[in-house]
Length: 217
Length: 318
Image (cartoon, rainbow over all chains, first blue to last red; front, side, top):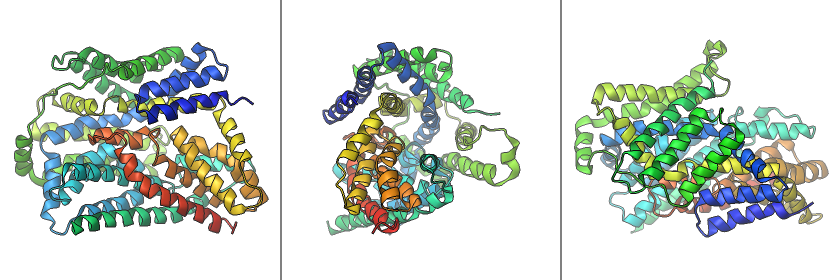
């Protein structure tokens, strides 16, 4: 077996580390990998094109942008911030902890596509988290926004596998079935629960610590 | 039956309209490149099934070239000032949240109704795609509510959409490109090579170290491929099934489920998972494009350790 196709991985790692434009890095890595594996240039371009076309479902979510943009035009972010400021006890950590739990629970019952970065984080969660921090410095604001996005990801990843009818569970089932282990999706979903609890505890502790550090200042 | 193909149409029309408005935006010095970029996305969504694999491949090269060589810029959309927004937020009050909640609520209620009432048996929607259909339906409803209630200018939905899309830029297309890279990696046999490599570093004898290599391998290979789906079959075939399940008698349900979640810890730490890690950085207009990843690493590492512990103790390997 030849190790040559792995050069594609090297291109990706080096490209991202050097912060070259990811679009170019990815295309270069794909072309190099295909060519080193013995495909001809037209075959590689065709394989790339077919896979891109097969994954257009990823682009559907952008249809929410006109609605989010319109509501921002009328002050949605400002309103979200005002609501949080009216709660005296609200803190960034508590708010994000609440969202973490909400995201994990809704994802666990199969509603993983109902929230997300364009739908909920940009218009609601991030401005609320910023407002709960009072008057954050620009560096703090940057950290808070990043934490809002991170909280959405952690909640999604460590909630969705509790729902048995999701792609990753089906994939696990199919792979193990090919080796003669025929498991029910529910068995697999059940074993996603301990990790979900660990994710809530670990990320939740960081959010709590986030509040504490701010209070200390 | 409403299929996924129908949903590409509204998305394609949005990209097409954004491309047209970009072409006319004289305040954007890169207006033609920007218009070409969004125009290619419109072509992909509306005509991707008719231009063939090579046609789609050339389209991808076009997108990457325009973005990679700096031909895509940010336009100036017709929107409101900060003061006007403060003012209108105070005037409209909490009712402003209602149209925003229409989208998640329609997706939520629609998905639940589809799965738990006889509605799902009607066969009106392509199986497993109902949430996407209700998401798009929610967008249409929300646009209707806003149009009747707030009466924005006719072009405002396009202009506001363009403002956000310009802020995201090429990051809006990168996730799809990475999915395509994963497919090329698979065709080239990268998974088999990595699997063989991982097997060669397994220390003989220690069950705990084997569990560690399995979980770390899932996380690391997920970081390279950008998603755990590509990593799981490789790691299961290399270590999970032959060593953990067959040699050491581990519980297949735990090894499958928690192995996948160990991979998800890797997803939190890689720019290759662009739609989760780079897109939100652009969407929230962070200065550091790796800001979200940096916020996630301190959660991902202890969580990976927790998953190793769950694997070791719950799969009956301890």
